[in-house]
Image (cartoon, rainbow, N blue to C red; front, top):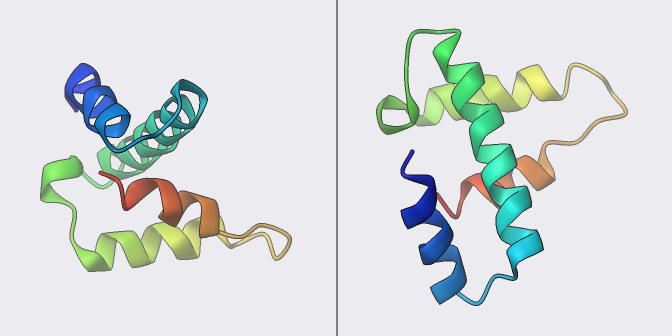
Length: 74
């Protein structure tokens, strides 16, 4: 991920620095998940996102909503 370019994109979209930091953190978490299945962000498919959500929500007390919220900016 081009973090600086992504940060600029978020800034142009009106996101505060703290929101940008959180979005980047979550997108990086998704990238780490993808690396475990030998993919990167550019290769991710809807099925990969679905499996990521399932993985996050293995704990019934955890929701993937904030992760999906952040990843949609990418």
